[in-house]
Length: 259
Image: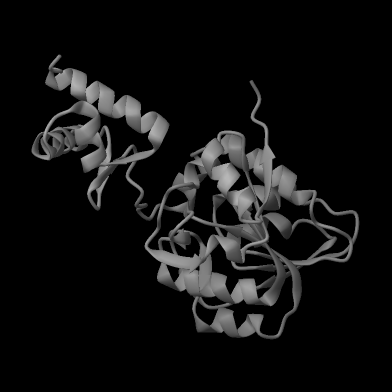
């Protein structure tokens, strides 16, 4: 029986929900129509923001991320970020000296840090330093450099050179995207370069990322996924992504969302 255009569109979207992505040739075989018809269907669905086309295949969401201010990011996935930050804070021990990068998720972490011992924090974020500055038990080393207005954090050679004098136990890193093939990314090349130096300065890299960050790509690559030690995320992480991370030796910590 020949499917109507509406029926084809519905079946394409239902297939993508379970398959994540599909090649044009596979959709053509599945729906028993020509590749030309499938491409027209995908073009129409993309115009209606139902899917995204990339390299001859269709996926449900646009994987590319635009730059947003930290105040905008704070409004997104607030519950997830708060839970991730709260869990990450429990990983800070008595003998730690930590680096905290920039972004709304590591800012949520900073709000949860209340040590009962002396703690040294190297910070790229002005907001993180401000939050931790009221705690008498936290010694803050604020990195210098050029101010990145959207993230209220420093970037550049001055910050990178300061890190060469330090040896830290843990880095808490926020990212804009995690793509299993492409790696960890941010929207700013200077921030990516600073994050790379931070990773070399710390013994262990812990990535804080809510589940919306997976299968997304920012402009600048920070590192391969295999270069990090742990990822903390929420329970909405796709099962396939979680399995892949664990199969590749990444320590995955998942915080459960209420309800």
